[in-house]
Image 1 (tube, rainbow, N blue to C red):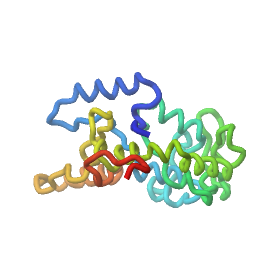
Image 2: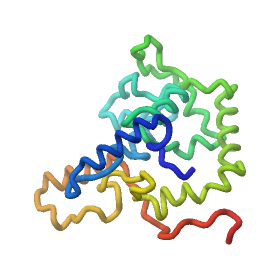
Image 3: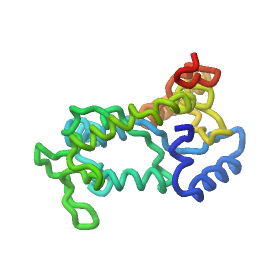
Length: 221
């Protein structure tokens, strides 16, 4: 709970992030991660079965490539632990009991065939989940467990608090993702301004920092 996604899994990946950070000049867009933990594309991707119209609009009239579609919990988990371009967090719907449509292609939409020859249909679930309903129930129970409850303050520090832009915590995203990082009065070129605005809208934004001091552990105040 205390660590951003980019620090988990393969230690070589984190080392690559750190080396790139150190090699980037201080007067440029210095960061550990060049993708964000939340963006419109991620939300749309997770909802493609329940709200396909979102992706069709987002992708200019089509679905994304079958190899990039949300197709398996195992694949998403593996990507978040290994891929240098995937440090995303789960969206709230992964912990809500009424969201089984996210995992079932009830509309029988044609999402195409992956490179492995597999038709993209329902989302593959872990062996420990017998159904989408069971998966969501267990996820919700995990979120409400004593372990998460007792350590939630660390996640709050990372997302909303004192370590949301901390090199020591390996939690530094692209400068554009942080509130107030762009001085719009200094951007005179219209095309450049549009480029920065588009980047911010599509890349993802870090929430406003709410806490300057470490958030208290549950039961301590």
